[in-house]
Image (cartoon, rainbow, N blue to C red; front, side, top):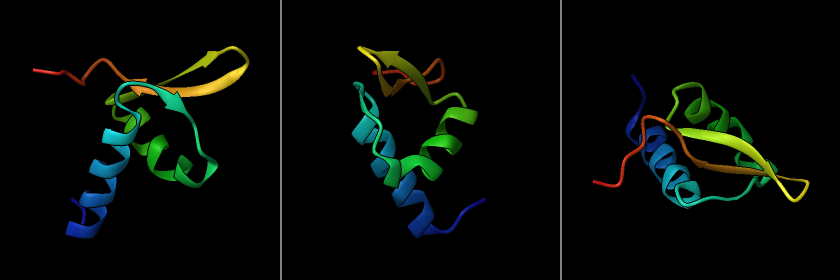
Length: 60
């Protein structure tokens, strides 16, 4: 469980990175939680760390 504010921050970060974006180190703690839960995944593109939708994320 998480607080409402934590949930909103998780949602904000998930939405920000869903389509893929270079990782901002300020978001890394929450990104790590979303990656561990398989909602986002890390990848390397052109030598940069990217976060994008993971196996549990869908666009339905």
